[in-house]
Image (cartoon, rainbow, N blue to C red):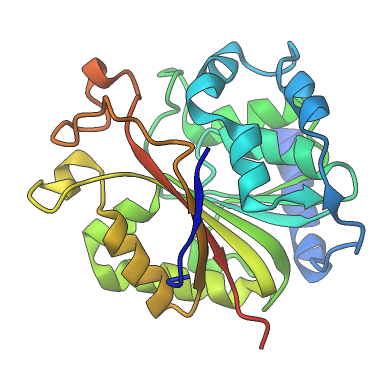
Length: 269
């Protein structure tokens, strides 16, 4: 792995109701416990191989490298985390296990999202996420079925935010939409807090809106404009065999896209 510094630098109704009822309290008690410490990568890896985790998610691990990605981004036990557009909950599960019982993971999905889970055409992404919470006994996960601008999370209330494979959708809608998203995340994360960005690499000559990609340089500009320091980037998820002229959903790619990985920091001032 090469790391470089950069100056730009739940379907159970009762469970759902319980989570919704707890949400206002959780949002008011978002400050972290102060017990953050590095997670054990070997223990997390072993936990992710358990039968309480869907096999489809386990099959993605070789390409997504979740343990290595979260190590690079600086996630720690005990942290309060926001999973932006958690979708079917791939990273929600991983981060829940990583932060442990002293941590909290807010899994945000827009209630208007109509996309299905990546591997289950018989359920929505929200249903898939709820199933993961039940089967994995992820007691530290709080569902937020609201737009990112309506979460109710307090200013400077989370330690770590993950934006995985979704920034391109905002940016391709309009750079202003991406700016609004990032500005909201800047408000929510604590000073010196971390935001991780993972996205599919696009090229300047391609129709990245149709392909669901974006240029890394566009991400650079968007995050720094929102006030973040682009602290470091990694080639952990790079793939030289990707064809950037193909849609990320093209079966020929088998999800093997070239992806950039950025670690952002909110200035502590």
